[in-house]
Length: 187
Image (cartoon, rainbow, N blue to C red; front, side):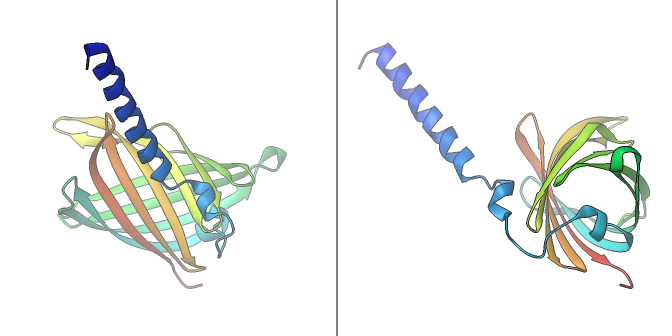
Protein backbone atom coordinates (compact mmCIF):
# COMPACT_ATOMS: atom_id res chain seq x y z
CA UNK A 1 0.00 0.00 0.00
CA UNK A 2 1.52 3.32 -1.02
CA UNK A 3 1.56 6.50 1.13
CA UNK A 4 -1.31 8.13 -0.78
CA UNK A 5 -3.55 5.07 -0.33
CA UNK A 6 -2.79 4.97 3.42
CA UNK A 7 -3.53 8.67 3.76
CA UNK A 8 -6.86 8.35 1.89
CA UNK A 9 -7.72 5.23 3.94
CA UNK A 10 -6.94 6.95 7.24
CA UNK A 11 -8.96 10.01 6.20
CA UNK A 12 -11.96 7.82 5.30
CA UNK A 13 -11.77 5.99 8.65
CA UNK A 14 -11.61 9.30 10.55
CA UNK A 15 -14.50 10.76 8.53
CA UNK A 16 -16.65 7.64 9.01
CA UNK A 17 -15.95 7.64 12.77
CA UNK A 18 -16.89 11.32 13.04
CA UNK A 19 -20.12 10.78 11.08
CA UNK A 20 -21.06 7.84 13.33
CA UNK A 21 -20.48 9.95 16.45
CA UNK A 22 -22.49 12.88 15.10
CA UNK A 23 -25.25 10.57 13.93
CA UNK A 24 -25.48 8.99 17.40
CA UNK A 25 -25.91 12.30 19.23
CA UNK A 26 -29.36 13.24 20.46
CA UNK A 27 -31.12 15.95 18.48
CA UNK A 28 -33.84 18.21 19.86
CA UNK A 29 -36.38 16.86 17.35
CA UNK A 30 -35.94 13.40 18.92
CA UNK A 31 -38.23 14.73 21.70
CA UNK A 32 -40.96 16.14 19.47
CA UNK A 33 -44.32 14.86 20.70
CA UNK A 34 -43.06 13.94 24.20
CA UNK A 35 -45.31 15.14 27.00
CA UNK A 36 -45.63 17.15 29.10
CA UNK A 37 -44.65 19.99 26.76
CA UNK A 38 -41.93 22.29 28.14
CA UNK A 39 -42.62 26.01 27.87
CA UNK A 40 -40.01 28.04 29.75
CA UNK A 41 -42.47 30.85 30.41
CA UNK A 42 -44.72 28.41 32.29
CA UNK A 43 -42.19 26.29 34.21
CA UNK A 44 -39.84 29.16 35.13
CA UNK A 45 -42.59 31.44 36.44
CA UNK A 46 -42.59 31.92 40.21
CA UNK A 47 -40.38 30.32 42.85
CA UNK A 48 -38.27 27.22 42.27
CA UNK A 49 -35.57 25.35 44.15
CA UNK A 50 -32.79 23.34 42.53
CA UNK A 51 -30.14 20.94 43.79
CA UNK A 52 -27.12 19.91 41.77
CA UNK A 53 -23.63 18.53 41.45
CA UNK A 54 -20.62 19.39 39.32
CA UNK A 55 -18.46 16.49 38.14
CA UNK A 56 -14.99 16.63 36.64
CA UNK A 57 -14.11 14.95 33.34
CA UNK A 58 -13.66 11.60 35.12
CA UNK A 59 -17.13 11.78 36.69
CA UNK A 60 -15.97 12.60 40.22
CA UNK A 61 -18.28 15.01 42.08
CA UNK A 62 -16.25 18.13 42.86
CA UNK A 63 -19.01 20.49 44.04
CA UNK A 64 -22.57 20.37 45.34
CA UNK A 65 -25.01 23.27 45.36
CA UNK A 66 -28.55 24.49 45.95
CA UNK A 67 -30.19 27.28 43.94
CA UNK A 68 -33.16 29.50 44.82
CA UNK A 69 -34.77 30.68 41.56
CA UNK A 70 -37.37 33.38 41.01
CA UNK A 71 -38.81 33.79 37.51
CA UNK A 72 -41.20 36.26 35.95
CA UNK A 73 -42.42 36.92 32.40
CA UNK A 74 -44.12 39.85 30.65
CA UNK A 75 -45.19 40.66 27.14
CA UNK A 76 -43.09 43.28 25.40
CA UNK A 77 -43.18 45.08 22.06
CA UNK A 78 -44.56 43.14 19.10
CA UNK A 79 -45.82 40.43 21.48
CA UNK A 80 -42.33 39.16 22.38
CA UNK A 81 -42.25 37.48 25.79
CA UNK A 82 -39.46 38.66 28.09
CA UNK A 83 -38.41 36.60 31.07
CA UNK A 84 -36.19 37.32 34.00
CA UNK A 85 -34.76 34.52 36.11
CA UNK A 86 -32.94 35.44 39.29
CA UNK A 87 -30.75 32.61 40.61
CA UNK A 88 -28.98 32.52 43.99
CA UNK A 89 -26.47 29.68 44.34
CA UNK A 90 -25.44 28.23 47.71
CA UNK A 91 -22.26 26.16 47.22
CA UNK A 92 -21.17 23.38 49.57
CA UNK A 93 -17.98 25.31 50.44
CA UNK A 94 -20.03 28.24 51.80
CA UNK A 95 -19.80 30.50 48.74
CA UNK A 96 -22.86 32.31 47.46
CA UNK A 97 -23.29 33.46 43.87
CA UNK A 98 -26.07 35.17 41.91
CA UNK A 99 -26.97 35.18 38.23
CA UNK A 100 -29.80 37.01 36.49
CA UNK A 101 -30.96 35.63 33.15
CA UNK A 102 -32.80 37.90 30.71
CA UNK A 103 -34.64 35.61 28.29
CA UNK A 104 -36.60 36.45 25.15
CA UNK A 105 -38.99 34.05 23.49
CA UNK A 106 -38.13 34.79 19.84
CA UNK A 107 -40.24 32.08 18.19
CA UNK A 108 -42.80 29.42 19.03
CA UNK A 109 -40.07 27.12 20.39
CA UNK A 110 -37.01 29.38 20.35
CA UNK A 111 -35.40 31.36 23.15
CA UNK A 112 -32.39 33.63 23.59
CA UNK A 113 -30.81 34.45 26.92
CA UNK A 114 -28.22 36.74 28.37
CA UNK A 115 -26.54 36.89 31.77
CA UNK A 116 -23.60 38.81 33.17
CA UNK A 117 -21.28 35.77 33.07
CA UNK A 118 -22.52 34.43 29.71
CA UNK A 119 -20.37 35.31 26.69
CA UNK A 120 -22.63 36.58 23.93
CA UNK A 121 -26.08 35.02 23.64
CA UNK A 122 -27.40 31.67 24.82
CA UNK A 123 -29.59 30.06 22.16
CA UNK A 124 -32.24 27.51 23.03
CA UNK A 125 -34.94 25.51 21.31
CA UNK A 126 -37.66 23.28 22.74
CA UNK A 127 -39.39 20.20 21.36
CA UNK A 128 -41.86 18.17 23.39
CA UNK A 129 -40.60 17.94 26.97
CA UNK A 130 -37.00 18.99 26.17
CA UNK A 131 -34.91 22.13 25.81
CA UNK A 132 -31.48 22.27 24.21
CA UNK A 133 -29.61 25.37 25.34
CA UNK A 134 -26.04 26.19 24.18
CA UNK A 135 -23.79 28.98 25.40
CA UNK A 136 -20.39 29.94 26.78
CA UNK A 137 -20.05 30.66 30.49
CA UNK A 138 -17.19 32.62 32.06
CA UNK A 139 -16.02 30.59 35.06
CA UNK A 140 -13.40 31.55 37.66
CA UNK A 141 -9.94 30.24 36.85
CA UNK A 142 -6.91 31.25 38.91
CA UNK A 143 -6.93 35.03 39.21
CA UNK A 144 -9.24 35.47 36.21
CA UNK A 145 -11.78 33.45 34.25
CA UNK A 146 -12.09 31.22 31.20
CA UNK A 147 -14.99 30.61 28.83
CA UNK A 148 -16.42 27.08 28.97
CA UNK A 149 -18.93 25.85 26.36
CA UNK A 150 -22.11 24.43 27.88
CA UNK A 151 -24.40 22.00 26.05
CA UNK A 152 -27.43 22.13 28.28
CA UNK A 153 -30.34 19.66 28.07
CA UNK A 154 -33.45 20.14 30.21
CA UNK A 155 -36.22 17.54 30.48
CA UNK A 156 -39.60 18.34 31.99
CA UNK A 157 -40.60 15.37 34.17
CA UNK A 158 -44.04 16.70 35.10
CA UNK A 159 -45.59 20.13 35.62
CA UNK A 160 -43.57 20.62 38.85
CA UNK A 161 -40.18 18.97 38.20
CA UNK A 162 -37.35 19.22 35.67
CA UNK A 163 -33.96 17.52 35.21
CA UNK A 164 -31.01 19.38 33.69
CA UNK A 165 -27.87 17.68 32.29
CA UNK A 166 -25.03 19.85 31.05
CA UNK A 167 -21.83 18.83 29.30
CA UNK A 168 -18.97 21.30 29.70
CA UNK A 169 -16.25 21.48 27.06
CA UNK A 170 -13.18 23.56 26.28
CA UNK A 171 -11.63 23.40 22.78
CA UNK A 172 -14.02 20.51 22.05
CA UNK A 173 -12.77 18.40 24.98
CA UNK A 174 -15.05 17.40 27.85
CA UNK A 175 -14.01 19.08 31.09
CA UNK A 176 -17.01 18.18 33.24
CA UNK A 177 -20.75 17.76 33.69
CA UNK A 178 -23.48 19.37 35.75
CA UNK A 179 -26.64 17.61 36.88
CA UNK A 180 -29.49 19.65 38.38
CA UNK A 181 -32.92 18.69 39.71
CA UNK A 182 -35.42 21.62 39.80
CA UNK A 183 -38.79 21.81 41.47
CA UNK A 184 -41.48 24.49 41.46
CA UNK A 185 -42.53 25.73 44.90
CA UNK A 186 -46.12 26.08 46.21
CA UNK A 187 -48.00 25.36 43.02
